[in-house]
Length: 101
Image (cartoon, rainbow, N blue to C red):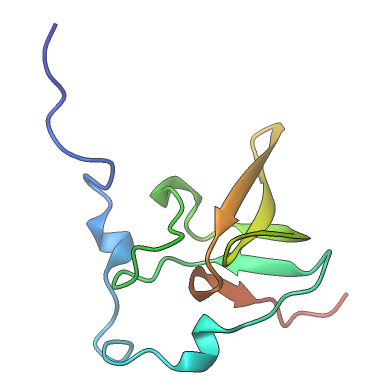
């Protein structure tokens, strides 16, 4: 058996990198965002914050907040193929969905 080389974030560092204009201090309002039950959110990794990070495979997807929290993280349900998956994500990795339906 060959040992797997690399870590969980192998070949996905480009997703975690920020553009030159996004680098620097993160506003505290991003840390303390609040989301209501049933609110749609976008998943976007912040590279300089490890707490509450999800797997890079889900970067860029949209999910729904269930309202329950685990510590400082929100429970988010996403659709991956034909399955619903539950992620616990820190608010700094979540974007409010501004589209109206």
